[in-house]
Length: 180
Image (cartoon, rainbow, N blue to C red; front, side, top):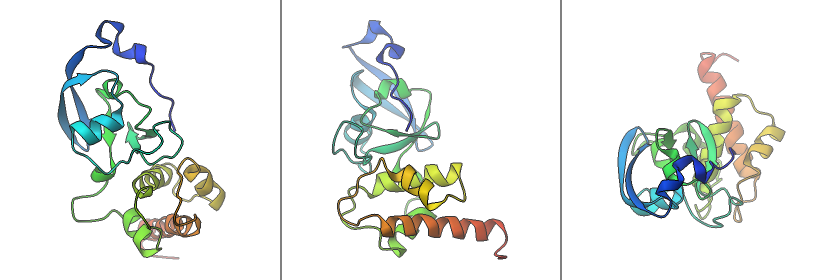
């Protein structure tokens, strides 16, 4: 995951004051009003913008349940100051597929039985999208390494790894026209 932006990037003259800024989330500009610059991206997404898919658990960047994409980089939303994401493209679990139509990764998680309580699932799905966008044919080691920042307490990881492999194989088949 990418390092957390430095608080100095938002300007010391605004620290501690409330302000209005615009975030580009899931393809739309969203105004954040009366915001304190110390609010995390996770907090703003959930509490100010009503996007409840990313979960808050550790608030320390250890569990991955708050993972989102910022300019195509996987980050822990709990560690990013929301005001530092102004001008960047933010994609949450709600924005990876049209409403009512799961992405191929979401469907693979269902098909592989890689979903239990659902708390960690959004972060795992975001990490999987990031991995497969960067490395369309990951090895099992690469999958394990990419998902190591996401903690799942329910499923174990066998079915999750299976889901990622299913998507990689399906995407290869789709790009080769189904030929093996």
